[in-house]
Image (cartoon, rainbow, N blue to C red; front, side, top):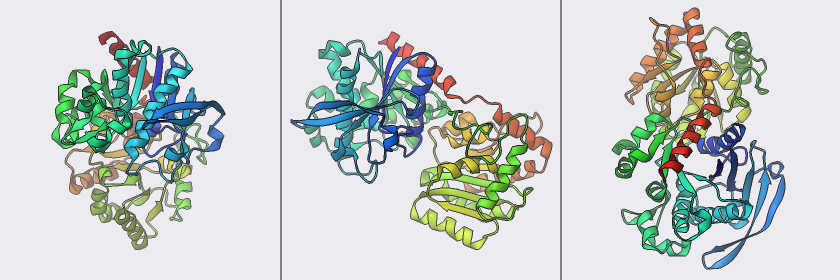
Length: 475
């Protein structure tokens, strides 16, 4: 099958969140199971030059806003699969990837250029896989082209929702300048008096997917649909949840080059060495029998930081260390630093992001906190499971799909899970985890239950292939 994946970000070229991880890993996994796949993503100012293997197309002329725009395309396989990076410096060489008033113009151009590029590089794809609101423009344009251009006639689209909260809204008056003038296009974008690129993608794509089974149901509700739940319910027969995978070539405690010692499900002794290194890295007392609760997250309301704030004192009262890596809302950053200042021998804080340190935290911590308000899929809980670090999560989205509550009677389960978004419910699970930690035999069982789960991208990729097949067969 010939597949083109279009995404606004993709590891290792760019990343702000889970979208980048998914878009970087899925093409590689599809290629490994025998499919002809290409990834198309922007070339940002942040994209490292070492990833730009060669200038593949020097004359990618794109008709845009009434004139001809000169772009280029670099080629790379740094993510393990063929990738083209569209280089348009005035649009993408900026201090940050998102956050500009003309983001709709930037990604409208990117989608238009991506479709032009696909025509330049070969035969029509069977599937064009679009990701999040940034690609809603491509969904509408391709649906329109399919009516008039034989090249696209047999191509079908899959549109993946990674986070319904971000919908790519802009003024309806901007549609003509983006090339969308037909009644079909205007109706696709129109939503409550403005234009929504997310709504357009949801409405016109052949098949919809999202990043966990639970989230596929949640986005059909008012709480998680952000005003578009009527549309996801309307298209529910074409909507499926596929849980993201983990790249075990990167996240594997048996081979991870970021770790001072390695360990496996059969020999966990190296995890203790990682714990020692983690405590030393944060200048904390090397008390290896004291549990470490950890968090690696964006400090936003989505991630349940307010629950951690409310329960911080109780976490320390439970006789544990607390280590956090993250950045985001200023108030949350200040809180973590104040917590560190209050208990410097029990709390370690790193404000910012550090990939190497994130690996060490996953390996050296005992419990991982993810009390998210909502979480379409989540990856850190799956990293934690692989590294024998027991997740404590709220039962939402992919957290609910991937974490099974520990049952001491049956010896089943791989973590601790609560439902109501309340600090006292989080604390109940923290104390349960703290109690289980003292039973070394039970704790080892929980760890191994988690490490035995196969959350690989190969499994996820096969589920996507099944979805692509159904999309082609259903028209």
